[in-house]
Length: 359
Image (cartoon, rainbow, N blue to C red; front, side):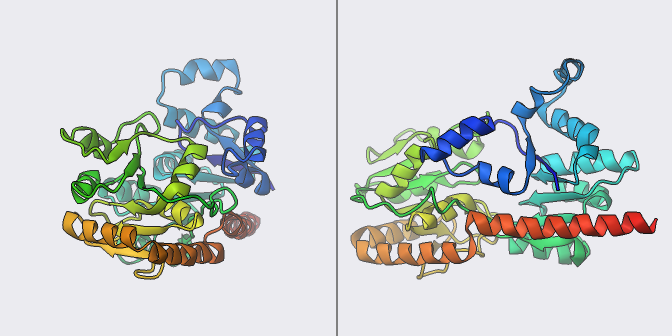
């Protein structure tokens, strides 16, 4: 079975051989594992460099997303199934299939279908999506109860961290950290840390060629406390930062999706407790008081109290971190995600063959 996966642009992915060397040198998570285990070609910016010259000439006038979608449409007959990794790729691809009356087994991994702009496109193109895989149970319930999407088309799938790369590393914990860009509430974190003298590094910056408004809000703070530093980290540097951190803080703005989940899972994989804003959407992973601490959204006083508590009680933070690592090993490993994908892919392809045979 051969799979084609469309992934978001701007990720600066290496070619497979370079990526394998990075992984073998323990400088990167095992990004290639998905590609290798599921026999998938990854349709990203690098893939577009391998296409015929005449298509490159046409594509240069189009946004990168449309380049990917059109190329996928042109070559999808070579594959047993197409996976679109994000709504911005899924809905245009499904729309193109729909208007041309073409059928291709199609699975999409989505995170925020309750966004009005997104669910309007989803409802328009759902006929040409075989499965919508959602990281969040809140989003799954919205799809079933609000959008009335048939249950047969919806799957809850657990997000993953590479537990072999992000693993517990013994180091003196002389700092805390926060990581990520989307829907982060860094001004509240800054106010919570102001006057505490607890060192914190916020690992953020440009993401996929874009500077999120949430990051701009951080850079726009005029008087940043001296105990806070800011700057992006590559994978190896990020792992070192996690290792040095007594615990990790994930401050999130009000949202009904699972923003912050990647950081949370990486932290748990590293054996670190997590302090997280208790949003509507962040409900599936952290066990309050066991693997981390929830605090009210946009409440710097409550956040400061939680930070000071874990900073002054490192044994509690370590116990939570160990519980988080155990939970991740049981539910959120990379291999578990890939096996879930394999089962769903095989089922969708089988259903497609039966439908085709019965036509």
